[in-house]
Image 1 (tube, rainbow, N blue to C red):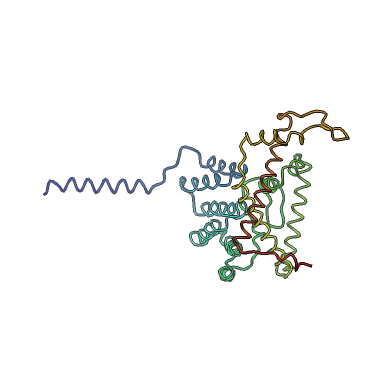
Image 2: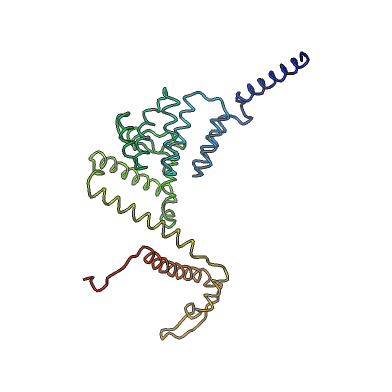
Length: 312
């Protein structure tokens, strides 16, 4: 039995050594500042999920003091809140700052964002409770720790180049193309600032609590939800193969012919000439058919009826 003791002791020491090594962070080969800069680059390229992963890697791979850890967690929370509108994940990161880094200067700002997240998640009772723990509910005025050069300021709030690039990316392509010069971007920035200032003023005057505003917001939310549902349902129902486009063209050739004033065909346009237009026409036709079919199915499933003779 005694012969086993040295072996057991060696095994215990080996396990302890492995455990000790696993608890220590070893600095990666890549310089710490480069790793954080890379996360910023991903953010500025609007690769928000990838930037979150890189920020997480930065936190887990380098020896950071508590102040910097809190700052990076706040950045991640802001990405979820401001850019991805994922309020559950944002809430988790703001709570992390509040409870894991209570000495951080960001706790007050995190508290405000916690309330804002809860409101957006329609958890009003939790929001009221959280509001009691902080001083005011003005998340729009919180100084944001975002990557990118500061291009403007509203009081203590910084507006970065990343903010403006993101707002521009949300515009329809035909509008976005109008802001491709520095002069046009400055005009957009001025309009953006004006909108934010007016929104702040409206909040101070508590316009968001007026009945007509609440009702309008509800109606807007309902319309957006319906549009998103319709888009998803129709996309699932409408599948167009490349061969379908050519078949549609052959069945509607007259539609793609040049005609004189009397309606006589002067020249038949080839399929290649009008291929894009044909594809758009077919998609619209299929989508309309899908919408009508879906409408009838839903009306029957929900027992909906229209009494035409009683409509005045």
